[in-house]
Length: 150
View 1 (tube, rainbow, N blue to C red):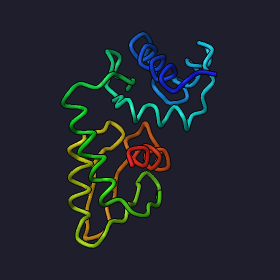
View 2: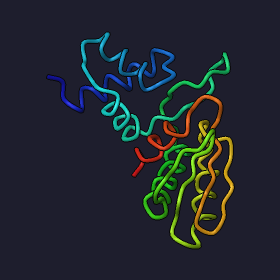
View 3: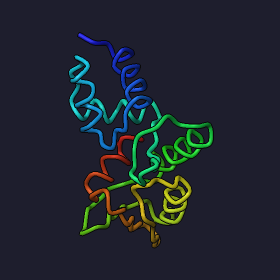
View 4: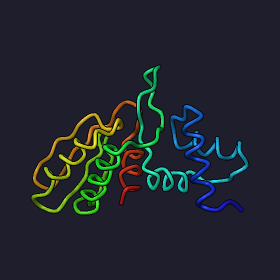
């Protein structure tokens, strides 16, 4: 059985060597290297490693190692999500996020500042944030991605 340390080390190596676009592709690459991991485990590993998505030379989003600025943005987003994110509901191409009254703008600001490629933009009310998903992700997938930072 592979340890978490070994699995995460393999993920870092694979991200440097291959163009991996999705968590499923990361899990598949791990399996091809003899490491069995379900997508939920891979999702947690990606969040813990702080991997970011960047556009490659072909314009496609791929996982990459974070830089210092990326780590700071992700830490700030994780903090805002822990403080303000409540119930969520997918609706069409939008993820509706509830917050405590008066904190929607703070969460929307943190989401915008994080510059996640999965988010096209946000609109905040008093206790609700509408998060518009980029074309590459569904609201349910975005919800799982944001919750991985909690």
